[in-house]
Image (cartoon, rainbow, N blue to C red; front, top):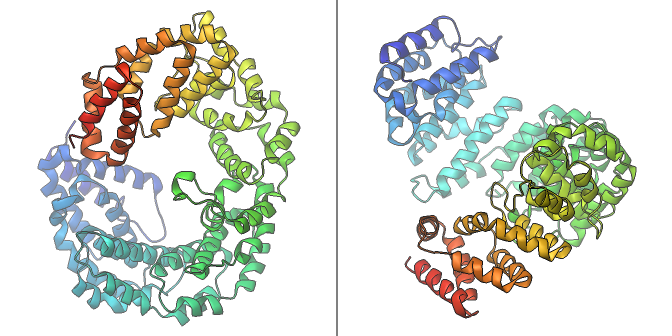
Length: 571
């Protein structure tokens, strides 16, 4: 339901009059902010386009009122930032605030750190030209080395936005000008800040330094040489685990700063922090390792595989990682898992993903110390709904050749599970899937995202366990299989090829039956082919590989491959 311009005017005037938008420096009313944010989002949605002129006029009046604190202005700018009214050419509606607010930010930044935050939103909304950057250089250089907390975070936001602007293909902002700005930063002042910061300052300062050194200015080596790391180490040793994220961010930032461009990396920033990492694990065995993403992802190379660019951790990185994991107690994690809550499953899975890649003996030790009955009881609701988090976690517990203990867990919970049995569970416990099938209960050969790795795993396990029943299952779910084949997948083509190979090994007749069902003129197939040709170039190449593999096989498979190949070459 839309709002009339009169209703918008009354609502926003009401917000102004009762102090919901105008926030004092002493009191921040979170509930009021949430209410105001929702109302502003509604006012400036595209469906209320006709009321925008009135709404903009009222909001601009608030923003340009010097009696409104800059903190209040910042939160208001943040609220309108992602609305329809500040996208693309609509930003011109707000242009009248640019110069007055920018002037105010420059005048008041020493009294209010929020001035720097407001300046960030101004360049986010309206961009910045080479001339404007030169005019504002003095202020930017002061902000970049002025302090910690919000001052550092807002300055980091500005630096990051300048980097993004100058690297944009259609940007008028000179990359050389931005690099020159970062080169002029008062590094001595920055070093003085670094050498007096407390643990609570680590996060904001780490974020700031990470951006200011993006272009690796000449002062980086001097900064690294004069940075008092031993002082920082002493602070880390006595820090409480609640500062995990701050310590992680600083380690990541100084590691990248010191090692950028070097062939042989210095890992003291990580190794000196191992006692603190151990302390954090002891305080929170479920979440700690995943929370140290700066250490494990950026410093040691154990990030998600799709972000590694084909690289694996070096022998030195693996050694440092093993030193960390060797200090962690599987027993502590097992005790915590005995009283797990659903929201912990995803972080546990991510932690185990890192740990298992580094030390494959950790999870078997964990299982030997786990009270499996308590663990399964604590996540009863996840078994019942086959939650995505549980599906992610269980793959780390099929550690034996017989897929135990995951197999037993699925079997013991088979009567609790509601709905069709998901493919990951079919793969680990094919006998449970066959029991479901024989009792008329549904199976899911494809999960919600139609991921082929899980489907191939499920079908391979079924075929290995009972070929005859597997054929019956495939026959019953041919409609589901055909539908999945028509949908776009980002998975590599060899997985689809493996799927067909398994079916062929089960029954040639069943294989041909599926092949003859496939119609590349089906609207679902045509939609995917259109998407591949128009917007999915990398995936189009993968499908071309699949088509050309099919063309080599002869018969109807080759015909399908040729049709697909021709349709994809129309691009």
